[in-house]
Length: 154
Image 1 (cartoon, helix red, strand yellow):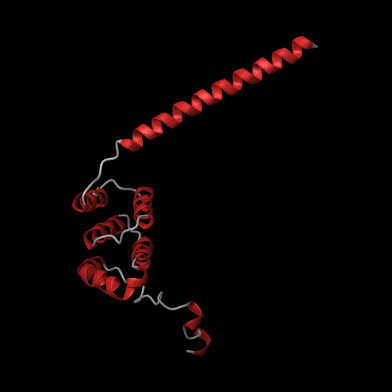
Image 2: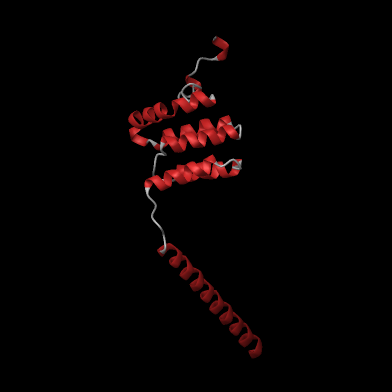
């Protein structure tokens, strides 16, 4: 009986020691990686995303991942990034993604929507016309569905 208890105690001690060693090793590497963070300028940031969206071999998952990353950042993308993303959507023939990306840019404007969003639309208007992409306002997405006239009363 004493042997069984001793074996279980030693096994539990060995397991807890190994777990604490591996947790220390993981924590150490994460702190090392975080300390070597390189700051990039705004121009480098813009150029990185323009190059990414301009790739010919970009696929649907990659473009959605990059757009999701942009939406998660505390920035409104520059018009040149938006134009590159819209061209990537056109290459993938994904009209819905292009419109949703414009909607996400509109939401990123936050309380300054009346100044930032018209500027963005003004800057990307030539690209929208070139690619044949409609804005959410042109599609009626700026109003709730129930605010539209009923199809039965037209």
